[in-house]
Image 1 (spheres, helix red, strand yellow):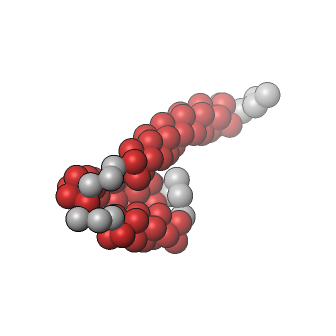
Image 2 (cartoon, helix red, strand yellow):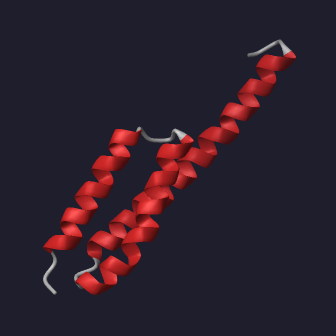
Image 3 (cartoon, rainbow, N blue to C red):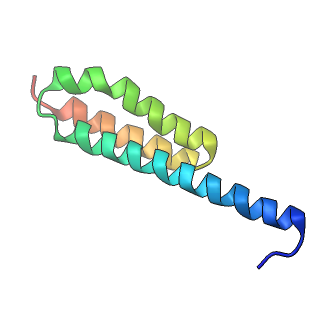
Length: 85
């Protein structure tokens, strides 16, 4: 266990960050799952900007790498564009 005050504070901060990152990551994964389940192109297209914004926020926070964010958005766009009108 940490003995220095600064180390104890760092443990508290990292625990908070970990919980926050897990929450936002899970929320984003659920949003991606929900948009993949949509069969209509119009409905998926309306939800796409908000999901992409969530992915961008994860990359901005450093929760995921920026290339992973780009890959997720690309796969999502390809899937939505492949839907029948």
